[in-house]
Length: 495
Image 1 (cartoon, one colour):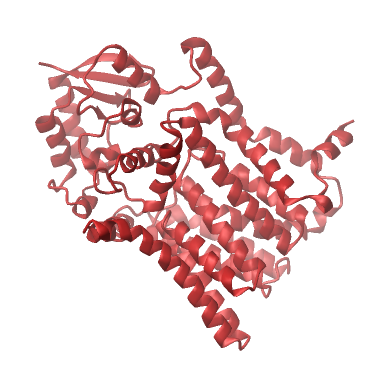
Image 2 (image 1 turned 60 degrees about the vertical axis):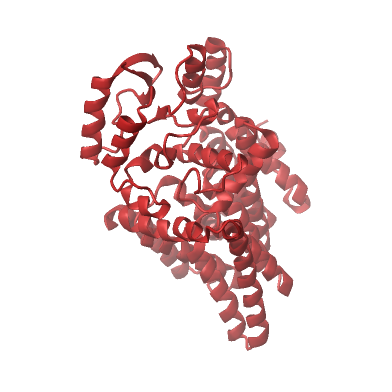
């Protein structure tokens, strides 16, 4: 009985069509991510992308009215969804799921090219899982969008030697780097590989032409993102926000090398093992391209000095393929039917998904809505009780600005943590120079009537002693706690 069940859920790889593979990946991603469609936010960055995108839909280019450090294509993705479907959490999360599926599908296609449909398919399934579980990955992150473009471009380069495909790959790589700037290292390394790969085969002219096509595609996309700013005479804002600010941010927010070294040590050990046991053919072109990408991504982590959980999305699809190639050659896995264990693991892993399904049902029973979270419930309460929303300040749950249809009180408050990132202020001409000056200007000059914070949590990063000291002293003197909704506290200004 168990064997029949396993056979039923195992696709026939020989006859597996692209359409079937895509639909199976879409179904897998949808089932894992669906309950999170109804949450107010999964990661604070996602809320910020939505706010800047809504500002764009309202007629204001990114960085002009609201500001965040990501490149323009990140905001264009969200703006396109909002423009087409309105203020819809469901639409944003669905198209985010589609981005995950696209990157997984091209992982499948690359795996099929390098090994077999079986290798490609299971690599793609694992790709879906690793981009959809643990921490903030159920939200729509810039990495999800970036890797959809990047993996499609990588497939074009690995699968075909036709010259025009390198131009198409360049366009996709341009979209990728204008979604996530640190992918520039991997994209540059791939371009150099294309050039020198042909040089080594004495096809100098062909290699040069393909490299030019690849580079031109990237520059076309970058140029198109600059064009709107140039036309309104503000190309300098693009340069400062897209290029200079991320470089400054990376230098100012570095972790200790000890925090990022474990990943480098693990990967070094893996590749040494694969080389010593001859489990990877390091002379194979497709393997070399994947290795070049891994090196590029790792270099970006090293240069940035930090690795957040969602950063690893940039590494997952490529690394999964290399690991799958190694595992497929280990004789240990050829001795027994491992499918029952794989099926059990796949059913066990999405624990967060099962808990979220339960939470959505519970919220529907308790509050009459599938949509849940303080970022939704607090705006509902504010509207129902007629509280002032002009210049309202969300120091947590800032997706509430979007739900209420208002803007943050200052450009720096687009993301609550940006209030204290004084190293970013010069790049959008903020007249204040420190985080304390910014929060003091908001509280003492703008004087928001309503302030929302999170209960029992430091308002700003615990390392920011001066900013926390100021806000913790100011709130009790000038505000009273009006209501607590789950973990959110709503404060009203004293007259």
